[in-house]
Length: 196
Ligand SMILES: C[S@@+](CC[C@H](N)C(=O)[O-])C[C@H]1O[C@@H](n2cnc3c(N)ncnc32)[C@H](O)[C@@H]1O
Image (cartoon, rainbow, N blue to C red; front, side, top):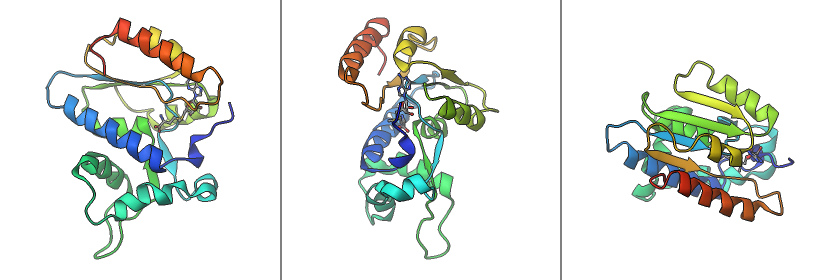
């Protein structure tokens, strides 16, 4: 396992993925019944964009930094951008939006979910699992599992709520990743056809 998401956090791929996730969560909140989010390859809760890793690639500069600075971003990005802003505080009068913290999918989901909704996080890297557990230590309705995300599709689906979304976001390091992804999606769909 060489892949570390801290080099890529907030880059253009994260912006698209996370904006879609935010829109799905907003739609799920249109109904009062609770839902669950299962994140099979969770990574970290939050990323420090001033860290050496983020500064080395600078991917966030052409991603979230550019979107936050846009004068009139498409409405589609509104819930996602609101969540990122909420982590970074308000700009000083007339100044630029401060940007240091970037939410990974676990924290983005948590920021947009309601207290009654449930978050299941699965991650294989021991250091990320440790930090995830710290990030969500005092949170009800958030469970962190040190496991293979594809096994999580078996273990955690269907969720008791019967409504919700699964995010499968592997690092694509393994040669068989696409085959595992395809069989994982088939399995998830068999177990939970209503799941998103
Ligand atoms: C692309 S990153 C996840 C980014 C995160 N979903 C986000 O959007 O912020 C992929 C993550 O999968 C983890 N990983 C790799 N193989 C895994 C596996 N078999 N099961 C669970 N996690 C795995 C890596 O340690 C890495 O943190």
